[in-house]
Structure formats: structure tokens, C-alpha cells
Image (cartoon, rainbow, N blue to C red):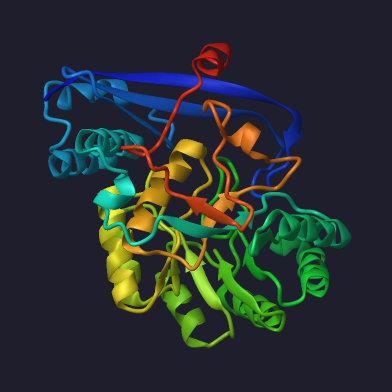
Length: 367
């Protein structure tokens, strides 16, 4: 089998009303997605999505004519490109989609098959007043979610703490609560400083009083010494982070910087390398539960790796209706990815990653 063509489809969904993501300087009015389709001479097509794939056309010749199942080779090539250009990990997801289709198995089975479903947590994306966030949590519980993540802006710390306090009072011990401080990295153009370890530690200790499972991105993601020190100070809650490259992931493991490792397979280091990272983290009694804030295709790729290796205890499910709902996130799919009424996200039983594109939506929202 040979790769005959790699097609990038760039889509843009207008957002009306805009989505006020906690990490964005201004509410976003559009949601872009790049769909990668890897075509082969035997008619098997793989699909991936996640990072922008900007500039990939200059490197596609490195893959055309090659065996799509030589994934280890392709990963090494992608890592050489990563140094010079972009992070093209959606291509690897498409290759694994092909591998699953050729084998007649879900990709999660190829990655180990540890679970056929994982509990998800509702990863909320907006900053809401305390009463609204508590009411939202009750609705999420009714839908079957067992956990949620609340965003806190450290510049509006007391508002964020109030949201956590109100939510815990509303749900009692029936839901797990995580908190994201969004200090690990910045959106383009955002030069605001990150928290320092003293301030981050003080916040973590306050959150521990409300049984917060983990504090995500309390410091800049490159501050491994600070993150390791924060963990060592025993703030009473776990420390979670996402890293950008496989080398950074290994460095974080060596530094014992995190309790929870969150590498996103379509944004950082890809599926094969993330599997290695996850298995190492799990072997050291740390948690692996990836970041998944792209779209339903990226979510399914992360589900395949996490279910394959036995990650958990939860998988991130971007969901904060009405601002962020599966219909927006997965506008390119025939059916949005959803958990069941018990809050479990099932691995699709079909071979590959289980992606079914909506041709009409692809045409309608083509950029």
C-alpha cells in the first residue's frame, strides 16, 4: 500500500453568538478546523484533525509514495519537521485511522484495548458568575456527568473561588471538581505574566479545601522546577499540565513535575509518542488524561490512546452549553461525539478512529 495523496480541507464555522473562552483575550467569532485526508492506492482513506497544519504543503512529498503503515518512520519525519515548521500530528492520527481500517479494529484496540469506554468530565470553557456556574453543574449532573472542570482567571481570583465554592455547595460530593488556571501557555499576542510559585501554591491550597481533584496549569508549562516544587510543597491537590513536545514530556517525567499528564495527541507529540509517555506515567503511579480541546476528530484520537493504555480516571470532554456544545465543536461530523447517560464515552466499534465526515457541512463551511 502507498500514500497517493494528502488532502487538507480548511473549514470555518461562524460563531453567533461569539464564544467567550476563558483563555481568549476577546470572544471568538469563528471556529476553524483543518481536516486531513490521507488517500492510498488501495482505496483506504484515513482522517485526522487537530492542529492547523499551516505550511504542510511544503513537506507532503516526504510522505507521498510511502507505506502508510510505516508509522514509526512517519513519526520520526514529523519530529524533524516539528523543529523547522509546524506540529503536523493530525497526519499521524490519519495514519492510525488507516491502520485500524486495514486491521479491521478500532485504533484503541491497537493501542492496547484496556477499556472500551471512559468516564468523561465536562470541561467548561467560560468564566461564569458563581450562581450560574453552580446551576450549570447541576444540569451537567442531570445529564450524567460525574465531574467538571472550572476555569479561574487569577486576575479575578475571588470570582473564580466563589464559583468553586458555590459549585461544591450545589453538588456536594456527587461530582468531582477540577480547576484550570490557564497559566501554562498563552494565546498569540497575550503577553500577560504567569503566576509565580508562591501565588500558585496559595491558590492550590485554597482549592484543596473544596476537594478539588487537580489544579491545571498553575504555572508556565516550561517552569518544571517550579511545578516540581509546587508538588513537593503538598498543596493538598494534584498538579496537572500539558507539554508541547515528547522531549518536554520526558523532561517533566524526569523532574516529577506533574501528578496528571495531559498531552494532546493532535497538538503535542502525536499518538505513538503520547502512548509511550502515558505508559511511563502510569508505571510511576501518575495519571494520564489528555487535553482534548480541538474538535470531535481530535477527541476520538485522544480517546483511542487513553482507552488503549488505560488512562483516567476521566477523559476531558469540551462542553459548556450553550456557548460550547457538541454541535459547534463537531460541525464537520455526521453525528457529534457524545457520552452516554452515565457519563461514559464509548470507543467507536467501527475499524479505525470511528470518524464519519458530513460532506454537506464540509462544503458549506469550506474556507
